[in-house]
Length: 506
Image (cartoon, rainbow, N blue to C red; front, top):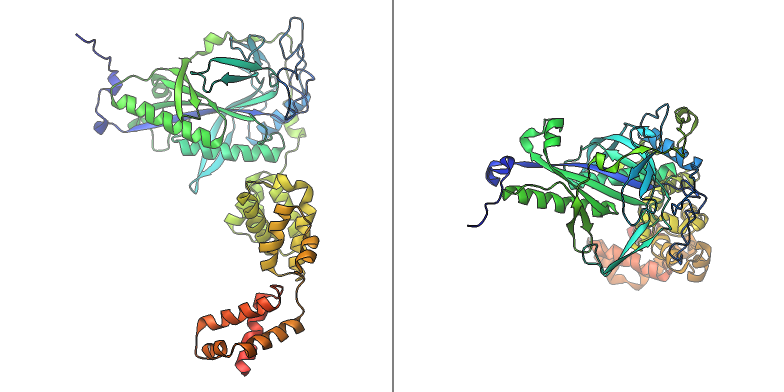
């Protein structure tokens, strides 16, 4: 006889009888932007051609007798994050040792925070498909980043061997832990995008740095009937549902894919009468699947105890002393009120602090609507097309301001500015004045335009006849003739107006 497969009582109903809901919580690890590591003086600036295991010292390698010294800049960054998330900064916070063995952890323990995090509680609002959501932040604490593993031959479960690089070990890390408030993968992705936006505004995080954001996601499945109308789920239900922790997620898109896959995997298992194992799984991005790593650890397995080499931290008064910049939502609202922008334009223009700063710089001198069109639509559109961002042209922002000036002062046509000057500025790295001179794009004076209009009418009697007969395309043809005659340097609106006036008299 074949052994009977165990069917958990909760899963005995058929798929048709059950509606299932995902419950998701995130642990977001972000590298903080500091010059040196969190407990030593090693640089956090990784060179492109850096050799493995060269940006290290006895402290971040965990050698006997080496003592940690806390980086004040990392604490300041943590307080800024707490202030932005509306967290409480306790009177006293402490560091602990989290004990576990893994090759990327040279000391066999990680210095982190356990029951006294630097940031306690909080929330973050974000939008999902036009609807506002708020997710509770349970805690945010400081810790050291482990080293990095390089699996030779592909993924973790197929690699022939694994190499360890400790250059990253000791980089200041902040772990932001959410409540299990997400009900779908798309919500998690939207939250991560908003969190990244806030962290970049604070100036404590660089999203372009490799490995700067990593996510561990906890996901379990419950009956939809257990979810209240407001989305709340009782503690008993949550504790009774086995959950998996998915690791190795390193992007917003990756989080959405990993969670969508894991949600489907668990629902399919439950609908087939199988019990979900409480385990840690690895997101294999190349294959688009999660693979089992190990059984899920419990808190007691880490044997937390206080870090005796670091004194308690008392920084609750820093929250009032440390200023943070205007955050994205507040700036978005101000842009709409102060500059009369619609919500879409305001969102584009506050997508990063660098974009928002550049827009305000242009709007101080030129019409706010013109500035919005050039920054939000033209410049960002061309940058996105080239897979670039505003930071890629940070040293040339004066040149792009000059381009807007040329358009605003009516020295070149909008069409030429958009289709020739802007594109060549990005592709050939030339200044707008050099391009205008090289291409001969200086605006034609009105007398020359009037002369071109007269020539177009004289040389194209059939088009003139069609225009008087009511043919819509005739006027466009004549405009094209004038633009060709002037080398595209005439303003199309002016040409259109002059043609209508001249044709009315013919």
